Image 1 (cartoon, rainbow, N blue to C red):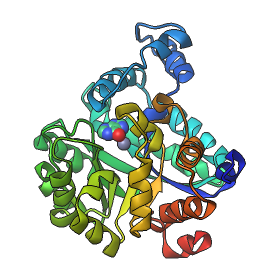
Image 2: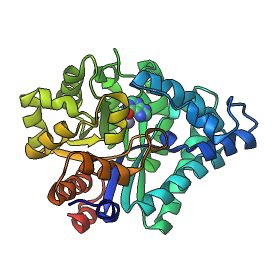
Image 3: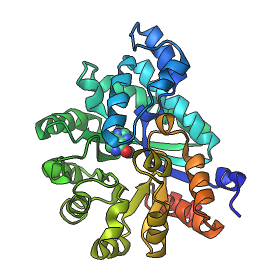
Image 4: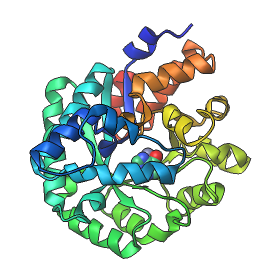
Length: 325
Ligand code: HPA
Ligand code: ZN
């Protein structure tokens, strides 16, 4: 039987974590006060009442406005370091952190303010025994021109992030919209991943574009791939990582997609478990492991395999991977 203690103690790699999604109500209120930003709520209970969503769009409508409390480099540092302390407590040994520069530059915050604050926390995480790195995401509901500008703005900071991703509202925003940015990022030696959110209008077509045309190494979510046996075979053969987020799934669909996750495991796809936006979806990575294991009666072997997959599909050196595999 898989206990809470077992999932808590298991060494894990966190590969699907939006740093903006770790903004807990306490810190949100503290930063609002410090930066003199009126967010419309003044108690934790009031903030929690706004956490009312049942699909991706209604979630994003709560998620983006809250980021306004992040103004100064120190705010980004504080957000990321607070998360990294939680990661250490969840036995996360390696974390690849998504950040959304356009969610900040679009409201007048300089790119360097964002990345310098986050990167300083990444460096300081070494003292917590957590190996951390950054992945820059493009907002797919912004234009490809905006993505281009963001990539060009980011390249001088290339030593501070290891890859690119794609997030925000997927509806009518296919991966191919960003083909040029992905090609250029790959040529710069950056790693590639992209969200293919669950149960989208064009899930299979988006997964196909990301895998077959854009050459991503991982799919974030991506569990709808089970509907297409050829793509499942492609993912297994090419060791594509699928970063599934059970608690997040449970918010935007009737269930956590446990059946799909188990089916992918059985077909040797490198699926793994993560937390997405833990401050908004009710739990960090240990909770995601435990709740899925509990509700879908996972064996210890299955849970260990999910954790191994997280290290195997991470972007750390083989030398470091060997420690965990
Ligand atoms: N999907 C799309 N955009 C997001 C997500 C997600 O799961 N989390 C934060 N931004
Ligand atoms: Zn996500």
